[in-house]
Picture: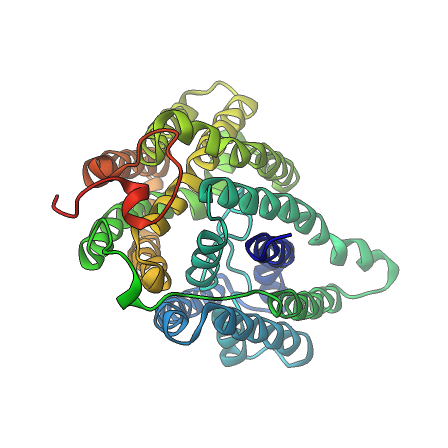
Length: 416
């Protein structure tokens, strides 16, 4: 087995462990706060402060990983997550501890149904490592990574039910939640173990071919498109369960079934992304799947039943999964290898920032216009697809072309 194949094997294992942990923490962390007597406003405060801390961590990771090595930073992040899980399991419920653990450890912060743990400060480390290890077809490697993550998330969602299962047997809910926090710490130590064999060999900037898109221009274009996408996700993610409740009267059990189905539906398209890229190219794959997903999303309010609306949502998420590996591989192909962590980090910050703004707007307008978050998300995601095409269409590598390096893979001049 080659060194790059070994790398991918360990990276896949790390994503599986991380996605397993992220899935159940995303469910139980807010419930643990509520069980501990935190009001809705205090829960919101914890999540907002931890989100701000998480954004700062993403930026720091982008700078440190390119300078000191991605494997080293990956091990450091996993160690932080291990410490966070153990601290939550052993310490009293105090606001500073909760903010630090959820912010530095990523506790309770997932990327939504179908994301498979592809979220947060680990991305600026993980994406360059995957791209550098997949010498011929990075889209396929990213697709497999996400597929593994989604399948692990489906299992993790079931693990979140353990505290409720133990409660009738004399185990208090709070103790059950702490048990899962301890499990997350153990899983993070497992990530440290599988990260140790990873080889991280990066060329010096002086030895690399010039990038197809200069760094500042690439960050500006990715930042703009991601900011639009963040606005859309902010409308959709936090308010979607409430929309299903208000629009169709769906309860917690029905929503749990829906999100489990969505996780499973989104898994397979990740594997098919590289096949579509061979026909359309990376950029056109992203744009076509994004616009088709917008159409499915915009159709949801017109569905006659919860089942049909859920089917449209699952279709939208499946289309999003089909385009996501192409989007990730294009970003990495467009960047010089020595700067890939910075590109992954700083291009994602606008998305995280704007996704914190739109929930407040959507929630306020939703009181008068129930479907506003759905249409708001569709509008910004459509704008994202159009802007992405205008920004990168000329830099798309030809359909079916192999990847041989940053310039050759994109097949274009830097003057655009």
